[in-house]
Amino acid sequence: MNITPGKLNKFTMFKLPSAWISGVRVKSINEKECVVTVKHKWINQNPFNSMFWAVQGMAAELATGAMVMVQIKNSGRKISMLVANNNANFSKKATGKITFTCSDGHLINEAINKTLQTGEGQTFWMKSVGVDQSGDIVSVFNFEWTVKVKN
Image 1 (cartoon, rainbow, N blue to C red):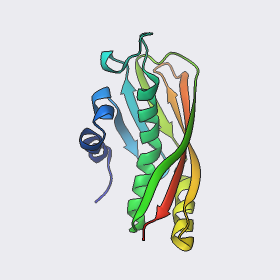
Image 2: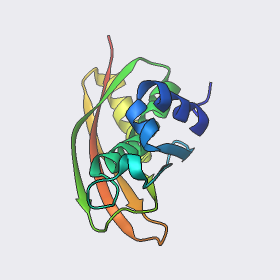
Image 3: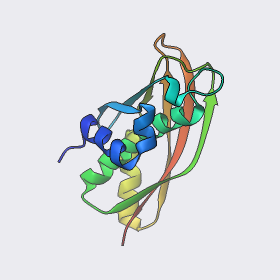
Image 4: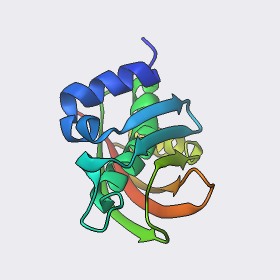
C-alpha cells in the first residue's frame, strides 16, 4: 500500500485532529520531497491576526515526518521515529495560504540503513520552509528526527 497525500490527510483526521481542524493538508509526497499547506483562518489565528506559530509547526513537522514514515514503511522493518529537537525562525506574518516544503528526503535512508545495521538510534536534521502566496518566506523550521530499529 502506497502512502499518498489522501491517506496522510485521512491519517491526520483520525490521529492528529488538531492539525486536521487547523487545516493542515499534505499536497504531494515522494521519497525526496513533501509539500504541506495550511490556510490562515479564524480557527488557527493568533491575537495579531496571523497564523499561530504552533499551526505552522504542525504543517512544517508533517512535511518532514511524512517522508520518514514513507521510508520506514518502504524498509519493511519496524522502526520507531521521534522528534528530539526543533527550532524555528519567523520572518513575516503568516497570512493567506502557507506552503511548507521539505526537500531533505535524501537524509532519511542513510539513517534507517545505519540503525538497521547497528541497532543503535540515529539522528538527522530536516528543514521545512514555509512560503506565502507571494513566494515570501514566512518561517523556517528545523527538526531533529531520531530513528531506531525496534526489537
